Image 1: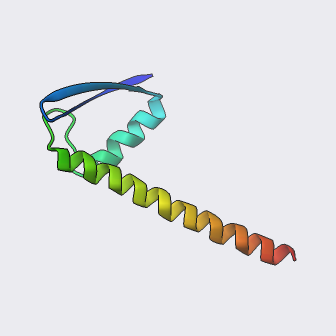
Image 2: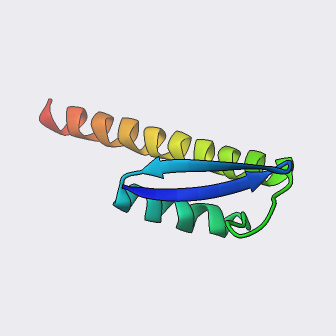
Image 3: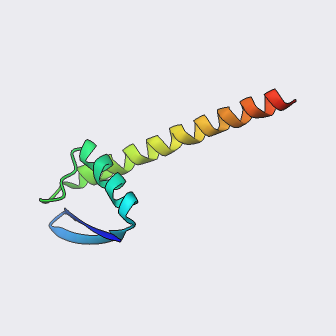
Length: 75
């Protein structure tokens, strides 16, 4: 387990995640300009969250398209 320390709105949060997932989260949030070594504005955490939601939405659409393609090819 790895602990990520997040800070926003003047509050610190220690979040324990599995090692691989923690590295993934850190890289993704750094891409959203989220800082792990200083306080972040609430807008930054919202931006990071929405970015993750968008990625999840796009992945679900790709999965649906692949399942449809597989289903069509098996028919």
